[in-house]
Length: 182
Image (cartoon, rainbow, N blue to C red; front, top):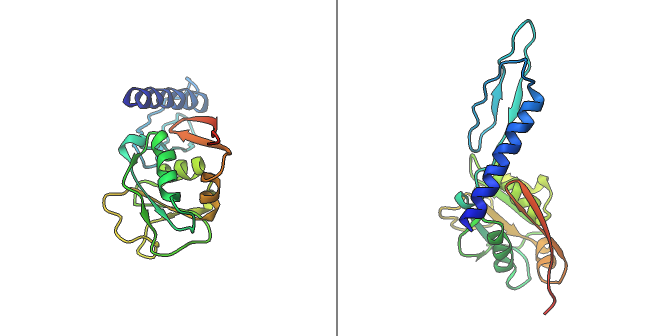
C-alpha cells in the first residue's frame, strides 16, 4: 500500500514538473518552491515582462487524517465512506455519527488542507462548493487529530448503499470500479 502511494506521488511530481516545463519554456529562468499544501508563486523572467504562475500540490493521502461522520439516516454510511476513502490511501479515523443530519454532504478542512479536501470531495462526487473550512458550526463533536472531516449526507449515503459505479481518486490518478452486488 505504501509502495503504491509512493509511486503515485512520484508520478504526480513528474507530471507537475512536465506541466511547469510547458508553462515556462527553457528560454526563461524559473525558480519554483513547491510546498506540500500551500500555493506558491514563481515570477523569475528576464526582460520587461513579469508573469506569475501558481502551483498547488496535495499532501499525500497517507499523511492526511480523515474523519467521516454520518449525517444521514442511512445506517453504516460513515463506515462505507471510510472504507472507500481508505482504499484511496487516506489515513482514516474511526467513523462517527454527526450531531445532526444534513441535507447534503460537506467536506470540512483545517487550515492548510483545502487541496486534500477538494480531492476527497471529488472522489465522493461532492461538488467543490461543499468544501468548507472547519469551524465550530460543523455538525461534528470532537474531531481529534482530523485534517479533513467528511459529513456524509443522503446524497453520498444513498450511492454507497447500492451497487453502482464509484470513482476513487488518489493524489494524481483516477480509477473507476464497478461495485459488486451481494
